[in-house]
Image (tube, rainbow, N blue to C red):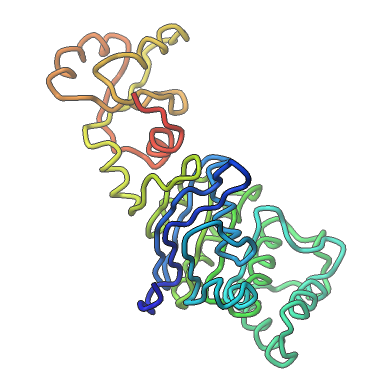
Length: 310
């Protein structure tokens, strides 16, 4: 599998089993160098277990994995040297300063002091860090903490950085700034492997893998996933009045739709076929203002990940 130098991550038949439970079940995919790769799924889908394997923290039960050309046959320590990891739980120590946190990370990575200080300056420039380096992490705003955490994960200059819900709990403005950093990192040639529950963030990934109950159920660009999940037209239904729960249950059973789900105060629906829709749409126009829309990744997530197909 390692004959293609353009691949940063290569996974073939990956299975991780705990007793009788398969957390990851025969998963195969690859990620190109410099790609921003989204990894989506509900809680318990197998995302974190897969990432633990790719970071060299968990040996697979079966299958082959190579990260930056390195496999478990060469030792998990070499894999760990190729990757950076940023957890959804803030990974820096709040009672230490920014400098102390990065010093500690550098010592764990056994970095040469001269290289460390050069790399630290480079990363401070990348994240536009303009606060005193002696600032306690606990005193930093959430968005700045995330930036420092990202710098820590990149300190040893890894080929691949794994970001596990990196913007959880920060403001929309801070999320936008963080994704600007992700694009900068990718432009530098690094591979970014990111999990997120924010669909607007997933839209910014080059490709997205969808996991459900340990299996990879789809892998494509955001645009292609929308087209393949909803090949027929989608409409937004804006209620003209209040919709009772009983009415919603009936709408979800309507044979004309393959998908009918709440979307804020409105509903998104994808039709089964044009002829059936033309036959029944007059009835729905009595209760809804209806107009055609493009499907969203949230629609894809509900239909594919949560398995709410009809």
